[in-house]
Amino acid sequence: MEIQKQFVALETIVVKEVRRFTRIWIQTLLPPAITVALYFVIFGNLVGSRIGEMGGFDYMQFIVPGLIMMSVITNSYSNVVSSFFSTKFQRSIEELLVSPTPNHVILIGYVLGGVARGLSVGLIVTGLSLFFSDLTIHNWLVMTSIVFLTAIVFSLAGFINAVFATSFDDISIVPTFVLTPLTYLGGIFYSLKMLPEFWYYVSLANPIVYMVNGFRYGILGVTDVSLWITYGMILMFIGVFYSWALYLLNRGSGIRS
Amino acid sequence: MEIMTAALVVKDLNKVYKGGFQALKGISFQVEQGDFMALLGPNGAGKSTTIGIISSLVNKSSGSVEIMGVDIDKDFSLAKKFVGVVPQEFNFNQFEKVADIVRTQAGYFGIDKDIASERAEKYLKLLGLWGKRDEVSRNLSGGMKRRLMIARAMVHEPALLILDEPTAGVDIELRRSMWDFLVEINKQGTTIILTTHYLEEAEQLCRNIAIIDNGEIVENTDMKSLLRKLDSETFVLDLAKDIEELPELAGYAFRLVDAHTVEVDVAKSQTLTPVFAVFSDSGVEVKSMRNKTNRLEELFVSIVEKSITD
Image (cartoon, rainbow over all chains, first blue to last red; front, side, top):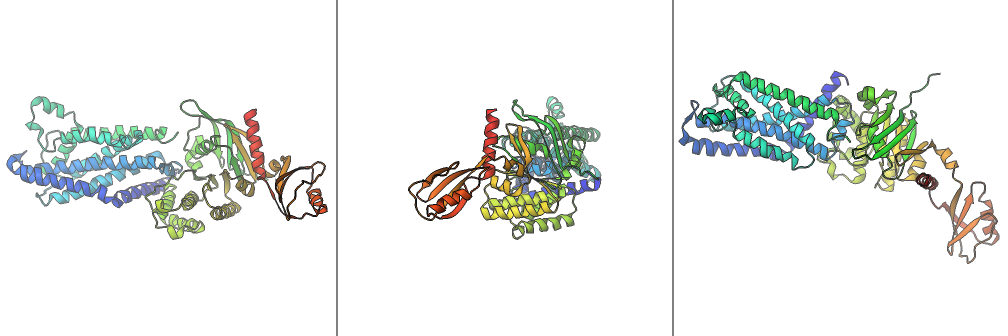
């Protein structure tokens, strides 16, 4: 397929994905906004006012970057896993498989759809945070690059989950038992420096710690971990997940008999 | 003289599914450009597996497939451009609008938005769905959903259109309008492969026929040659008045269905003139006459039964 036509196919997939999550905005865009608004009210305003400073900022300011990142992570993941699995379930994936669209275009299209939802929810949550806290950006480049790259990582992870999934239960296992614990233990609500030494080092094995801290650096200018390790880890995950997802697509795992 | 490339060449195609079930046992057949071919066979014979391999939904175990001269092992991406598939099951997003489904499919083939919109309008109009373009697809009737899948398969204007039981569960009027559409696009040059359980449909539409059974091609010929193989036909005669006894006519076997309906077996070497004459001589008029079963159906059953006993 010629490059120009590949771009048409890519645009088609992305537009279809964006159309899907905006059509069902009550299920996709509204719930994270409500959930995060509750976090702001309860943890930020009510509890946070008694906690005082953390990392040199008041508690509300400290948790805002983490909550934005949590929304981006969960939404980019769940968009791709649910969308790709439902195309498998409804067999509308066959529309793509019978077309000359190359597998890498299919993968990138779904990933960009996940990134679009992750960033849309991120923007909504950021807008909500302005009602509770001032937002000053320390480094625009770091902030935007970290959030964009993180959304890619979790969109790719969602795609791999969807390829292996054979039932709707399978698409909720990873978010419930892996993603949520890692996110909550990823330094959203606390600084790693508060932890005992053992748990500090255990936390460093959690990749979400790096993403949350990298994003927090972009907004507040403080981080518990090295920015270089953060970029290195995110790029490594992108490389591994992209190669794995493309391999599965080329093999036809779960989609061709 | 230039030799035209065949629309489809299937050679020694094998498919063994996980678990060891062999769905195809080295089938070979060829479909010329412009042909209207029927691919028939009982349920589970291997028709859908064959279509699945041609359209890339099923991985073949061995053998080769060439579409418009392009080997799918060498350039499947190019080969796919030549094929449009209308599957047996509904396989579109039930929550998308009709026009969006067709336009999106065009996009997957790299067709620009403007052309995609024009084509969507053209085929939705031809298939009587333009008025439903903004309807969510799950709200369509079964017949409309089948036509939607045809419009979707035609949007990239493929050289080869494969339809897997497109008229299953479709009422007679709609079926005939779909036949008209298929005949028209075939006249315009689209090669068509049709699988169907309505053998009347295959006899009426198709010029060539391949019968697949138990993963093997058991017949592959043109429709006329196949029908010539029919040894005898059974006709049903409706009589103008009741009769109590069957007429006697050497070489013809009559059966009384009821007082005014008679069946008669007529061999290929015989004619119907003596049958009419014998009723006429006894003062009974024949009001109407019809084939007891579809001719192709009789052949199909005999071929498939033979393949089972062999």
